[in-house]
Amino acid sequence: MRIFGRFLYALLAVGLFLLVFTYTIDLTANRYYEEVFGTSLTDEDSTLPEFYYFYTSIPDFHKSEPIIIIDQDDYQIRGYEIARAEVNEENIVEVIESVYIVVYSKTQDLSLLDRIKLVNEDNSLSEELYLIRFKTLNILNAVNEQGYVYIPKELFLDNNFGKISIVDAGDNTIIESDFNLFESDFTIKQNLEEFFSDHGKLPDEDDIGYLSSEFIGIKTIHVDGENALNGGTVLLGLGIYFIILIIATYLIFFRRRKYE
Image (cartoon, rainbow, N blue to C red; front, side):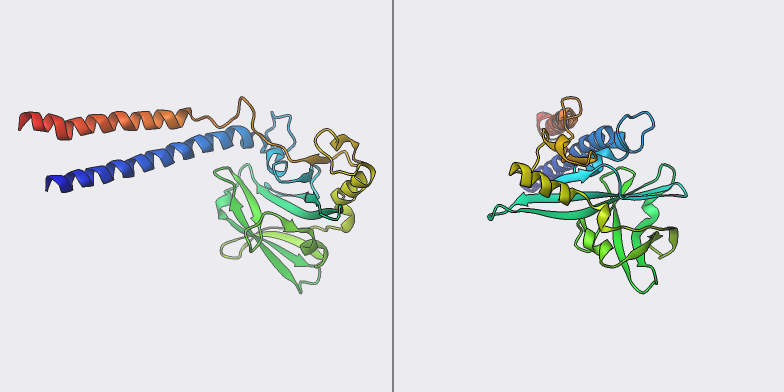
């Protein structure tokens, strides 16, 4: 019976360790997201462009000027052109252009929002994109059925969508607005192809200023000395756990044995 009790105690100790470890990791990560990513949520005191940390963290290239801008009833929908690029074995540059969509509100409860609905001009065709929260922040990303935030530009251009709306889980329309995207709105591919033709390579951070569009940028790693993920909280949580474990072990096994 004593062996069984010690076995249960060991299982409990391991379970509590995993719980504390997971909790402290989540707590540390959430603090990091708030300090780093939260500063670009249209903070009036920030000098950063709105949603800067979101679209600039997507590979490989982005355009900081949004190609979808919807402001309605305290909701904001922004769509950014992004592009993944590589040089293939035939030394030809391949560029895949997509749209990265974020939904934000400073005052509204975003947990009520479920999907973005796209409808063409004569209402004969529609497409839905699901909305997922980014970590613990009050911002949503649009994803397709495969769960990707990279929404192919062809979805918009081939279907002639003219309306965009946000609906809740009950299919109630929260906001609705007209919008249009055209091939001319997507400029990253042409810029990369022209640069590759002139220089025989894709632009890096030092070259980005030579592109003909000043709004095009390269993926940014948003970690520096001040905002790097700090493990101090994890170490503190685990330290408290081990102190409690040592005291509990002593009281349950060694102190009790002393008085038996």
